[in-house]
Structures are given as C-alpha cells and as structure tokens.
Length: 273
Image (tube, rainbow, N blue to C red; front, top):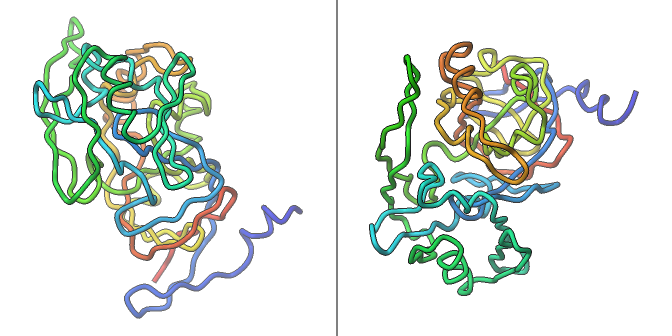
C-alpha cells in the first residue's frame, strides 16, 4: 500500500464551530488549478493556499472593455473567443500572460497585448472590492439551438461569478466520455478522484488538505463548457448532454470554513459532526 493510499486510513478529527467532527476519506485531490484573470486560461499547480475568498490569486484580475464598461467574459465568444487560449500565471509577485503566438507579457503589458489580440480596447483591473457586470451567451435547446444574451455580475473581493471554490469530479467527466484535458472547459479549482458522488457531498463540510470547505450548491453549467480552447474543439453536445442527464448541473461550489494549504494528492474527507 502506498503512502498516497495510506493517508486515507489515518483517523481525522476536525473542529467546526467548536464541535469535534470525525471524517471519512472519500477520495483524493487529483489536480489543482488557479485562474488569475477572469475568462483567461489558468495554471495547474502542485499546491495552493485556500483563503476565505478562494484560492490565493484566483480571479484576482479582470479585463474591462472600455467601449462597453463591462467585464470581459469568454461567454461572449463573438468578441472574446481568443482569450481562453491565453494562459495567465502568477509568479515572482507579478502577473504573466502567454498569448497563442508564444509571446509572454507582464503586468502593465497585458492590457495592450490582449487589446491587440482581440481588436478591443481592454483594460486590466485589480479587484478592490467592486462587483463588475458582464454579458455572455446562453443557449436553449428545442427544435433548433437558440442563443441569447444574459447579464451577470461578479462577486465582490474576487471576480468569481458565484462561490469562491469550484470542485469537479473526474468520474463525472468520464461519465460524459471526456478526459482530464476536458477539465479546462469546466474551470475547476479542484479536480477530485472520489468514490463519493456530488449528491453525497452536497451541504457537507469537507476537509481538503489543511482547509475546510462547505459544499453549498451544484454548479449550473452554461455555454462556457462548449467553447473551443487550447486543443479542445467546440462541442455543443456537452452542454446538451449535461442538461438531459444531470438536470444541467455538473460540479460543486464551496465556501471556505477554514483556510489552509492544499496539495495535489491530499485526501478528501467528509465530516460527520
């Protein structure tokens, strides 16, 4: 038995709101991701620090279209389809982006570089507690596929659309005939290898590494999962299948109960208090 497997059998007791809680291991952290800029590609990491507002550095920046005054959203592919092919990363205290041609830009260079890529006047903004509006496409399946615009707003403090942590199950991707590479379509912070189902973990407190997360709701999927990016083709059938088989949801949103470090391979333990 490897140390990776043995960690699941080590008894764990957590304190939640002054109560002692036993924990049952249901799986492991398979991959960790961070997306420093909203609607740009992100980075895979071996270790993250989870703060109360999410993975440290996640959705720290957004792009604002100076013509519309709205946050840029990849859900609006007519204007911003190329942005998912841009990789954003944080290192040495700065933001770096790599455009599809392989060029790398840092900090103040990012806005002009992405403006040139999209043909739009884009401004990179740091989050200072504001919420930004954005417009994206939604899709309706009937006799024909219909697209329509839908407005949304980011959270304050970070530029998340909903909750600060997003979890996706590798088993759910396999059930759709998708590979781990397709995880990029769903933009999780944590990809898990778990014997539990999403329903098993809903409304539970979960220990992941040193952090405690409260699973608050399933993730309603949108047009984002259908878009082409980094070697993945456009595929409208993914969203259609999720709506037909899973009532339109795949993945879980979580809030942070206790901050802490999470590493790839860490056990995932569901608490019973």
